[in-house]
Image 1 (cartoon, one colour):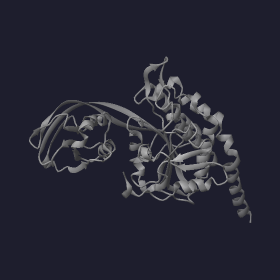
Image 2: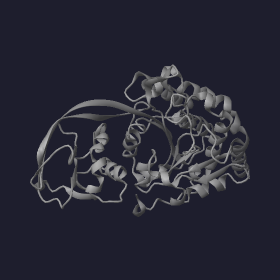
Image 3: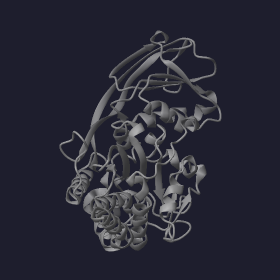
Length: 427
């Protein structure tokens, strides 16, 4: 009987902390304190490879330490370091079906200083056909880490040269991908290219709360902490503070880390991470995702731009890819009676599910979704110097973070597991 009473008391204590004391940990004042540091002018807009983003990373690391998180398994600290390459083309030559290779019909993506290729190399052939999403498809090939020859339909002739934009920052794991703009089937090719490379050292910030009974099952809470840095002055202001994009998401991750550490009852292991390089191509999330077996990741809550109210007003947010798993339904069930509502993404044409830091794991079948309130058709401060803390609603932001915490309870306890993304449905 005594054991039963102890268990009942523990459950009641947990329920009370979920239902009442959460506001002592996650409230507008504490949210504002974190947000105001991340979006401060001395963070210089948190552009990758800048003193400002290094200061931000140190701040986040200190917050994770103070929250009581542990470094990821095998790590000595909270920094997850990796390298990307920025190529400069020196020369490019060769033939394609007996025609001369030029920058108008050939784009070579490689991390090799001296690159040479003929059809005997046996690279897998891919196509970008008329009607395809040109840049999205090309981007997927580049980030796959595989070697491809890609035949691009001539209908994309005007956009073709812009593929060079996709090679500006390459992960160290990038494969060799050669794009040919062609009017007929590719039969013979012989191409050579020389590049010089600048290297950029980047880092995510990540910590964990080990699970009690399901240590090898992971639930991830994430946001990106990089932004655009310093640009051309507008009315005397040159700092792109990125208060909403995405200091708001990073603030949420820190607040959730504090809260779940205070609860200290997670059966599944919780991972908290602030990604770098989202604005430059999602480099941080892709590197991070490769460190986990996707089969062991039960859910991912990626949080981006929650500082303004949604199209439905306060106490609401939307979930990208809502229809792809039942995770949204689980979250809403946990919020029953709270007055908060998670809606399906109303901006389906924007393909947001595959455009944020959840995308890499989602493509591997993980129920990985982004939670946002951003009005994609009417956010006046998006990617502008005016994205400052004064434009955010701290009370509503705190309510959203609390709702994310409460909505996750059955998933982190292991009593609910979202269905997987159908990888046959990938775009």
